[in-house]
Image 1 (cartoon, rainbow, N blue to C red):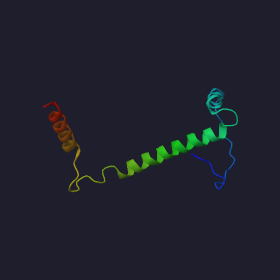
Image 2 (cartoon, helix red, strand yellow):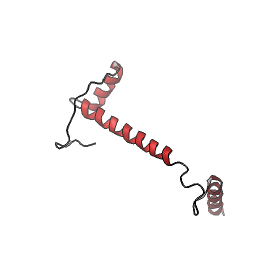
Image 3 (cartoon, rainbow, N blue to C red):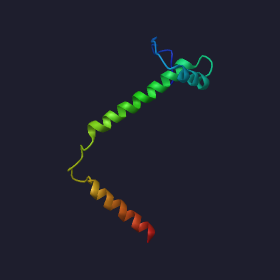
Image 4 (cartoon, rainbow, N blue to C red):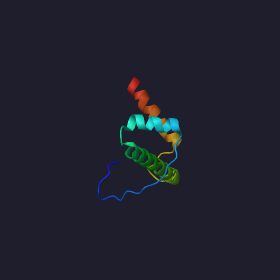
Length: 86
């Protein structure tokens, strides 16, 4: 995540275990703690949002023409693999 001057930064208080904070500081470098934590949180939020989207849309195409079910996919992959060994 890149910070730009146009993005409003907000101050917050985050409590971390001492050993974890020491590890953050060792990799974030001098005066890099906030940027490091912001990037880590942004990455986690993206992952959680993607997971939620996947869960919400799971099975949406089941029964739609042109889309294979799990058994069809397994058969198709096995067919591809057998072609590769012939």
